[in-house]
Length: 381
Image (tube, one colour):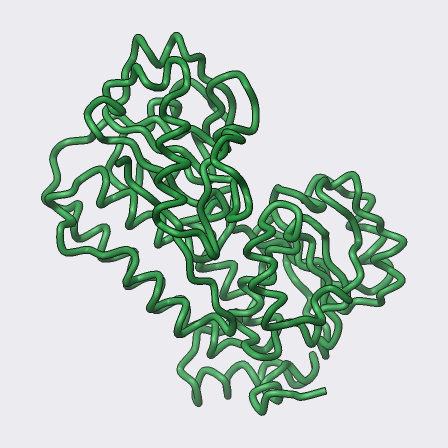
């Protein structure tokens, strides 16, 4: 199996760890975690060698690809199965570059309850990456964690979902540390922070804060309206200089806001999240965005959803201030691109020179070892 020359940078052993950390910092100028702590606040005892990795979510293949490049799946011995089901177009693009991804054993399907610890143990991983919440085991799944750790598996919690803008940098840094990819992690973090700073700089002179309603997973359920409030993409609304009108209504990360409430407390801007992929038909009620989707298909699907009962009565829709964003940015290290799109929609004058599409193209070309071109956000016709 092909091994990138940089694979020699993996940690060699606990006894020489301190020396290696100092040497890494001296040679590469990277930030090294002296006592790694994961995103659940647990101290991590790194194994001497990481050859076998388990992913608690299939979509963690994206940050893994950023760090591992052409070796993206070489160390993956098992993963949860939600990637192919929830983002079929993105999975297809990934598989085009890494056909062997289909052969990676699945340890579960869509939900944490489907995770098989027996199957995971049979794969003898050195490390398991889990999320703070989502489709795989979380910190609350103590029996699963204890059985893995008793078998010698190092469990590491990362997060691109619960508090994405806060936790993407430490998650990438921690994954880089565990995988011996510190240099690659710091390169991504530097680029990510530069793009974050462009939003912060643009907001410095902004005085208005438009009311925004973010409808999540448009078309998944008949009743309106599912939303994200104090978590996931809901946090991006506030960081982009908006007032997420669900924040004070829903203390958790997501929930429902009634259509009646929204019609009596009209948002200035409407944003829907898209769970449809390129093979969907517009009349199924989903907004279609993501890999392989044309701008025309995306806009048509948005326009159809904006004609739903009640939604078409929003002043934001009547005034042409309705938009859609690819739903899977909610669990992706590329969330900064969604933040830039939000900022441009909320404050077009302040961000007239910001082009999120160029940002996305630049980041993907530099950090992803596979092609994902398509339409990832769209504005109302």
